[in-house]
Length: 142
Ligand code: AMP
Ligand code: ZN
Image 1 (cartoon, rainbow, N blue to C red):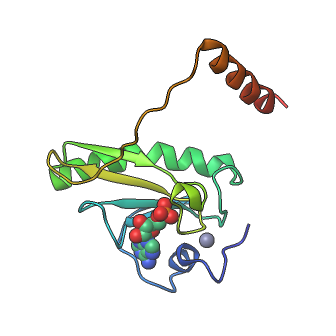
Image 2: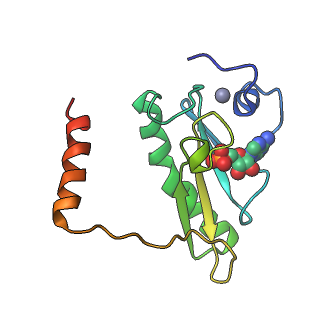
């Protein structure tokens, strides 16, 4: 899919608006997030405009997930972070605000205030888990 006129990441890819680039190859561009959860927070974007990771050519996903840990390791060395998260939001309900697939690489520090938490839910029993797994497998195998 061609780059879009009304998408902030496409406009960055086209050079119409600036970014703080940290990595680029034929498939992806990585730059510092403008509103970071921690210093060094990076977004990796494919050079194709797609809203969801379910729609994009898997070659882009391969390129992104190959480079993401390398960027994470570089961020650790550059910032002194002790770890990093890689995450990707699909859909508004999942926290996606920019409708162009992107992966976050977030350096983590011992006393940072980043919280990725939820109260855990419970399945009734294994039968309930199996029924749900069967449903998902049926869709996957279609
Ligand atoms: P998400 O919530 O997963 O859609 O993440 C979108 C991210 O893109 C947010 O963390 C924003 O801060 C970031 N972002 C939006 N516009 C820009 C921009 N012009 N340059 C860098 N990062 C941006
Ligand atoms: Zn786009």
